[in-house]
Image 1: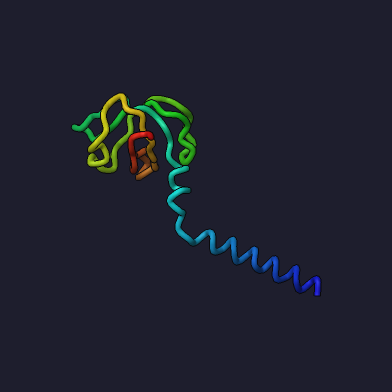
Image 2: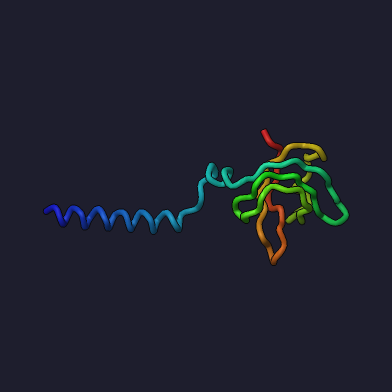
Amino acid sequence: MKSLRNFVLRALAVVATAVSLVLPVPAYAADAALSEGVLKKIDQASGRVMLAHGPIANIGMPPMTMMFKLKDAALLKSLKEGEKVRFRVEDIDGEYTVVRIEAAK
């Protein structure tokens, strides 16, 4: 009986792990993936922003100040230079690109 119970517990653990790999990431977990920084410069003409940022964990980047491409210029609709922001950068076609950016709360 004990071995059957252990088998069932192990099977449930495997199923739970498999399910967690295919379910969408909840919104609260996505917020944890945002990095923090300061919007130093907006270059509308080139569709780029300069961010002084802390570590960007999802791409393994240490703190620094650099220019990033914007996925969509509309991301900046309510942001100003000098503002503290939370953002998400992804490597798209070999270029670090801001895919989400918002004013820090």
